[in-house]
Length: 363
Image (cartoon, rainbow, N blue to C red; front, side, top):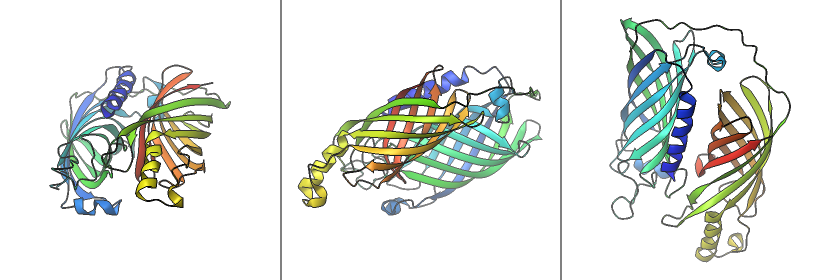
């Protein structure tokens, strides 16, 4: 499942990036060291030292040839590789492959990088050889990192320096238990090297783009597989059907309101397991596993790619599982004027429940 999601994301990135024209490129190398965040008491035994690692990035600059580049202050896009030593005999190390965007502020001295991709864990959970690793239930994980750096370019010819903060996250979206996940907060310092010596010629064209202010109606089905909290239980498919209305409020932003219907076979099996293991009124095996929620969301529109965040509340919630408030984050890619695809992570606060792919239509 994770390999499929990784390929899906890679396809989105390739489609989006292949539309760009050739511009200046640069590489950067960043060393980081920090701490594992104690987001859950169950990871306390995993924290044995200060994690450190290296992130190597290849970046291509944009020059404003497309209007969306001007709207976002001429961002960079690229790919990055990471090595992450978690300083724990239980967790081992992870290697990452990501696609990323760099956004700029303060006259392009402040860089904010958003990266998404895959992590490969060297020492995942194993019932016999590594039973204490409750963070990584699988070798292949979904990986995210955020980097906020202050950059000083061309201090010595094509060489510049940068330093700041890095946040990394690794999880399999509960596709396989256990999945407490690991977050690292770190300081980083690095160098960047310009592969071209010419200054980029930024284009400044008045943006007269129009967008529809009418309400737009969306329907999407999401699906995937996940596993209950019971380690060793089978993986089951899940389906989510959503309908929502959104309204674009600026050329870059849209707000949405909608309803979700959740069908999870792993939750159905979990209810039955709990009724046998812990019989009682709260674990009635006849309780409905289906849930219905309402949500509000925000969409950041970056060309054909959008970053989405949604906050929801179950209005039909017969079985009390993980809390009545849920959140969803992810990305959407427009295939054409009507059809779009999406990849999203649904969680209850910091506890991931599903990592899903979706196909939808906008009317």
